[in-house]
Image (cartoon, rainbow, N blue to C red; front, side):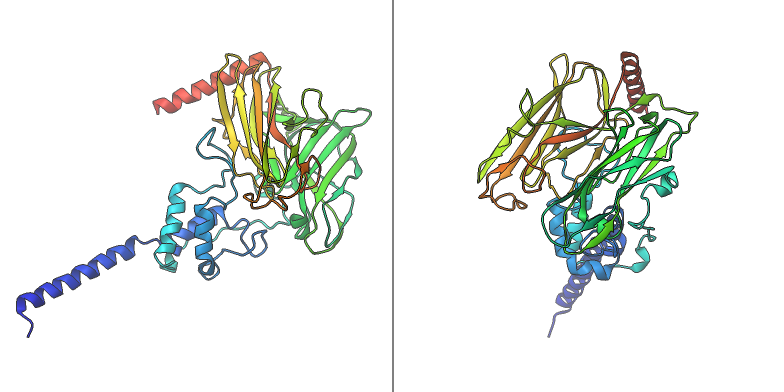
Length: 438
């Protein structure tokens, strides 16, 4: 026979256990309430039925089988692709695709708590995804003012890297204009998979200079110049296309790449003129031929460093390292005329499969005085520790193929005169003071 006092203790214990379980269940993240908003914000642009992600992550039924994999990739910051070191340099970007520590912890707690679906009524409203066949800037900026097209290229199903470099007449403008934004749009769906990176460069008629209208890489398809900044575009010339294709097992006869161009109104030219993304080499400097100093022995590392002096003040809008399969780190530092040194950005988990442009937030983009030294440092890893190294037994030298190497950075930069520099610094300080008082 159970004593009444013992029975009462048992009942109280069971009630407390149930209460504890109920509290635990309420605190445990669910897909509908906690995880779906994260996937919607950071993952579904690629992970949808028509996206470049290997599997769609649009609903619980699609996500649940990959819960453990998602936890692994997010906890290691492999996904979403954002290869910037979060512990050093500028951390405020317009296009930040990374997950916060809190979001990563939420996903981990959800998986460890059983990957519960939760109440479907807690799901966020569905977002409208833009098809890869459409202009990604269309919703924000309307249709392009002008579209230029490459000559057709027959994509082979299998093989090594392919390059397509046609010259196409530049037509459709009767007056010089200032470019406000540009978008590089490979064909859909195959072109999105086989065009790894490329350039559309205007060679003005009768001139040797180049006007880089658009540059592309997987992870960087468009560029919007900062307000009041634009690129001067002449009326005629030819477009020199440089398209890097990589076969993926499917043929694509007559593939065409398009570039959409958006201009400032004719009667509203921007205050500042930019050259867009400018190449800063980290190899072959001081009279040496390009890439001549890239020599990476088997099972080893190499470090290269390049410096460039700014002969005028400048503002930096974006930073995009370009290495190949052995590239692992690229750091951009500023050495100011007073001798002080600052790390602007460091990509410490570079992955050649992605060509991400890190676009600085307006309140954080570097404003640098004349005489500043931009210093770039590249690190190559030709060992078995590099997960995308195709063969650590090989000597690696400079070359255009992914299995060879390059070492340069594309930097979105606009040169200023001294008056513009003084004004930019004054405006930055005024904004900072306003934020401090708020």
